[in-house]
Length: 296
Image (cartoon, rainbow, N blue to C red; front, side):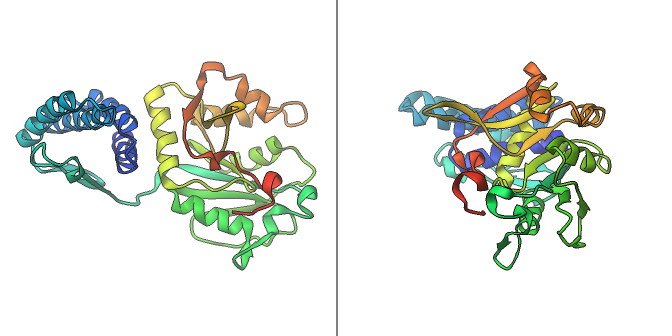
């Protein structure tokens, strides 16, 4: 998927969830990055359509109607379907029904590899978490399959030595060192990966495709993001969750760290402004097996 396609699909995901302000943000970036022509006009109309829905949600009905009318005029000057490969977008023919807007994306893989860290002893869980049985299969296999379903082009899993190295399409399973640090396991995976990475510990809930799209879109919008994490506002303050998106340059820098002295969390916080936070409402990004004892 191209950067433009990611931005548009992320906007579509937000639209379908009635997150109109977020849809506006993604579509606005896509519009501003598109050369003049019908596609740019269509994207500008989408941006206005989302703005109208957001304004209407605030109770400003007259303003929403004016914005939606301008969007409808732009839609009519293009077509009722924009050919935005790899998906089609059905556009409304007039301003009467905002639900007429429908995005039908393909399930094309995103330009990233997911790294699943699952090599630990799992002493607090009574044994290696990767091997906990969930629906008749080891937790790590279920997590790997969910990452592929969420859009990862490939999954590299670093496993406890007691794990069977199962061969599955688009999956590489490697044995790690259960006594080593998470950074050591991550470097084991990064040695066989290229490009951006989606990082998930095995005991954290695997993301839905919509969250992965949002993380990638946030990186595209930021332009110079080195890492992106989902964050949730809680009563105790803003907390960061998983998974993390890591830029190709960040992956290269991580490969060079000394695992005997460096810490992954210290490295990430040292990125400063390059460590981008993506606010999300779903607190499941904060979940892990250690806290509630439930494998998802």
